[in-house]
Length: 109
Image (cartoon, rainbow, N blue to C red):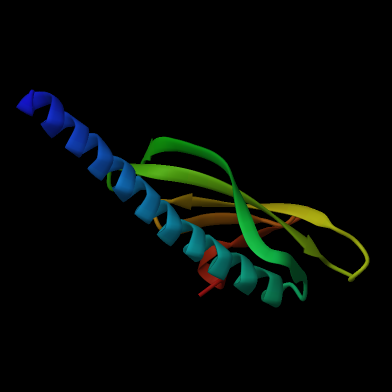
């Protein structure tokens, strides 16, 4: 029975870590999207992002990281709703897609 309890505890710890890491990644995505919208003179609608995909991927250093794709809505003229997406590898922003053009991650800081 102690083995079952040990693995149950490990499972709960892994789920708690995933939840906490996902909150940090979502906050990083919201900040990057706000910055991208401000630099493109757009309005971020609902002031939030929604998870659209999650998978494991290798980083440039070769380690495994969670690749998250979030979707968001923005308005470029105040009368419409456009969809965009942001890709994060771990906590690092890879790309922000705002429709017809991409906003590079290095311009967001």
